[in-house]
Image (cartoon, rainbow, N blue to C red; front, side, top):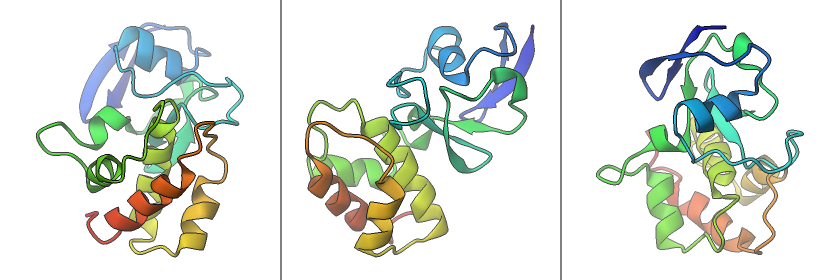
Length: 152
């Protein structure tokens, strides 16, 4: 199958089978390594991207069904112009091993788009299904709070 998908503002022609998870296309065909393979069951959040503006687990989204734009953490911000969340995660040293950070950032960015100034309870609820084994949860919450209000 050949299909055109829009990722991070650019059109791409991909050739994977239609039932191939979007995650594999992003990593293997497009060379985007922000989204990670964690569980393959949409339970850990490491593969989270924005699809049609919503935080979505790319490990279970067949590329053949992708019709809307996809944004990965690489499209959230750049080294020259980081997203406020990326700046806040760095300032708060919110990553230890960093494996979960893609999912945390993408989920938090979707939250801040909907709720620009969330309560700590809303942040915890939004991030509840993103697994982190390093224990940096408190720093991640502080980073999201820091970024709140600075997101456009």
